[in-house]
Picture 1 (cartoon, helix red, strand yellow):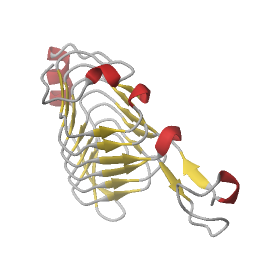
Picture 2 (spheres, rainbow, N blue to C red; picture 1 turned 135 degrees about the vertical axis):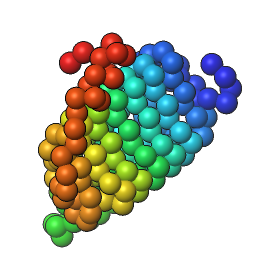
Picture 3 (cartoon, rainbow, N blue to C red; picture 1 turned 90 degrees about the horizontal axis):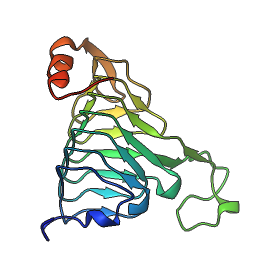
Picture 4 (cartoon, rainbow, N blue to C red; picture 1 turned 90 degrees about the vertical axis):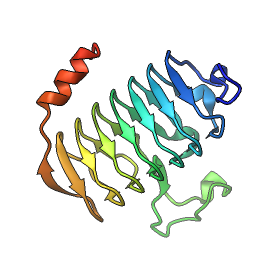
Length: 185
């Protein structure tokens, strides 16, 4: 491990063939498990639990927030491109309490706390925002600058605010290539 990389020994567990830039902040490393063939670029900021399978890339300046009760799960062959924001826990902003991480629990607004899940082969484009409880379906792609507040359907391309389906994505060639890398479902 080069000194220009993050100290992997802080993580709960990790696989092989990984690169994590030294310029990342993982607030709760003991809640982070990563698989094999992983690249995490400069500026990644994560406050939640994180479970990563294999062949994953997280682009520069991605933010994952939600604290110790939040969870992001990334399936095989997933990609999160530059500048994305993934919110795993959020205030409801319903007006029934105070808002903020430093407010005592008994005075807080209701929190929305549901895992965000990326199924195998899913991709989100630059500057996309994903809200709590969303599942990005297998093979689903979300275009740049989109806002995702509902689950996406498998092998479908989404764009917009809010994200809406525009096209079905073919999967046969993608699955064929993955099998050549020993992917099994």
